[in-house]
Length: 297
Length: 264
Image (cartoon, rainbow over all chains, first blue to last red; front, side):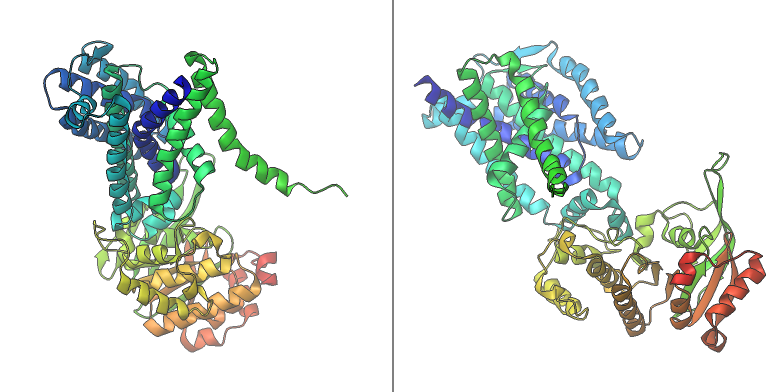
């Protein structure tokens, strides 16, 4: 019985983390950049949201504040990368490291408890009479759908097309009069905004903001992406692909919940996740290599 | 039209790999000129095109296009006047995007990109008609990813995209060199057709001497970063490949006949 409860809870959690997977997808798949600022911005969102809730700001409003703060962090990575010509991976690492200090400054310590404070989830529980898990699921799905709709619209516009094309072939975009620097900054801004929003939701859901909550989130995001792609396939249209990322995030949470149930320690989870991502990213390359090998006569 | 005055470019200045790519290029094009550019490896042909397009900044000199000094403009800001096709068929298109999306990007060359929809119904219809003129059946595959097309198809599409919005100057950088002879011929015929139809001013770099003589109204030869021979009109029409080889040896004092030239 507890397994079912755990899986149900994992499903709900997955929708919140799915927002982060959407953000990671924008840099990793669309822009073709591995952006490591993710770890810092996820915690940033949680910190901002937790701090302002304890100061009496409406929890919904703190989500928007987290979104905005994440976008600024993304702009920093983008400017480091495009204007100062720092390689994307290093630019992300710099932002991530810097955010560690920034996050502690914001919270005035390594963590803030939201015990007894209103969150978007407690509000749902009181006003609609939902239980904790259902409230999580509703909030996660509603925000997920809004984000997917917004991304679907944006990447269909002229600017959004230029961002997609930049990840495909920068050279062509410049030849066609597109500013690839602006496109990259824009992609990083949107991506980190979403990651921070996801961090805010997770912090409110778990009842505290913590400096360490973002550690390894880039790998969790990647795991959700590859699981989503493997299970749901890259087909139909862009909205389907985006939705499949949330699906991937949900499946990831359920897998984690399962292996925890069967006795693996939470401390092993990062290793476990890294192995999933390594296998999922490595298989296509190995497949291609072996399919080219000649069959022995 | 295009006016290049005393343009210099040295790569890796002050290092052991220093390479003087352009050494005082002067060139003036008349509107409607279709100029073929030949020269040995490292003569500065591609570099000249890249300097016009703004891929790298120039060290010295000026580049005027339609009377405007574009010497210091970044690449993406010059793009509104230039149509470009490259040697590598992969370079001119975005493989992961649909044919019609690629065309929509090209159709917005030089236009400020905003938040309106990336491709309209009216455009799709127009793109379809344009694709049909290529005679490759691409008009039935508008939503296919460009990565699924062959090199020749991609090159034909790039050419169409480069001229979708009429450029002041069309830059073709050995755009048929990576294709098999039959496909190369097809793309070349298409090039002549499109250039003639819109009366485009064109600079075409080629390694094929016969093409250089047969196509266009003017031919220039480059060597060591300079234009060393400039011929047009009837005189160009009367040229033969051996004349060009002789001409080259005469001005450069070197043997022009590398394998690639003779075999092509």
